[in-house]
Amino acid sequence: GAVVSQHPSWVICKSGTSVKIECRSLDFQATTMFWYRQFPKQSLMLMATSNEGSKATYEQGVEKDKFLINHASLTLSTLTVTSAHPEDSSFYICSAGRGDTGELFFGEGSRLTVL
Amino acid sequence: AQSVTQLDSHVSVSEGTPVLLRCNYSSSYSPSLFWYVQHPNKGLQLLLKYTSAATLVKGINGFEAEFKKSETSFHLTKPSAHMSDAAEYFCVVSQNTNAGKSTFGDGTTLTVKP
Image 1 (cartoon, each protein chain N blue to C red):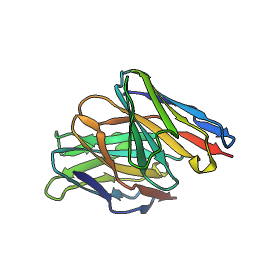
Image 2 (image 1 turned 45 degrees about the vertical axis):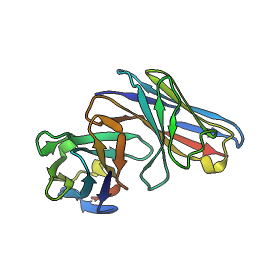
Image 3 (image 1 turned 45 degrees about the horizontal axis):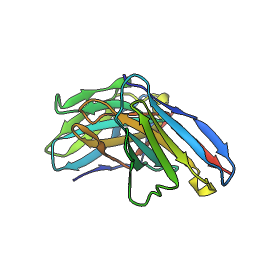
């Protein structure tokens, strides 16, 4: 099956620094990728839709200047958490769709801890 | 418009007994339906999917689900639970051809007792 790789799996940073998370589709081209945030014991919350070669589409309430998304190629999307604060600590997951069935392929997730 | 409701936030079973995780959906079109499993600090893995073919869908690890249009349900079952099945399960409804229009259920935590 299709593989989506996400890196890093774990990251700890100091408050005020920026963190970049990468999401790669390894064996298919993904014109669209999705970024989610997941709080403990909760479902996934869609943050934004990443579109190759164009601006990301953010969900209501998500700060686009805080969560910068770049989709520079058909296999790579990045999420940068800028000027991170402890409240940004969370589990971030990316996914990509392939085919015409609506199926999503998920990365392994990235646990961000901001001290 | 679409929505999905997972009827149980927690399900606890004994090892070797059947598993039933319930999911109801609503959709204004013919949907695709998915069950995903998530282990702690991991991404989501597809268990099975319904995409307008056979209504009884078999997935990985012995799981299966039946699409019942009249009941708008897509319940996940397994005849015999294994300790490794303990995880979070998500039911997802999606518009065909457009993965971006996916709606996630709130999840069901499955606990398997020895």
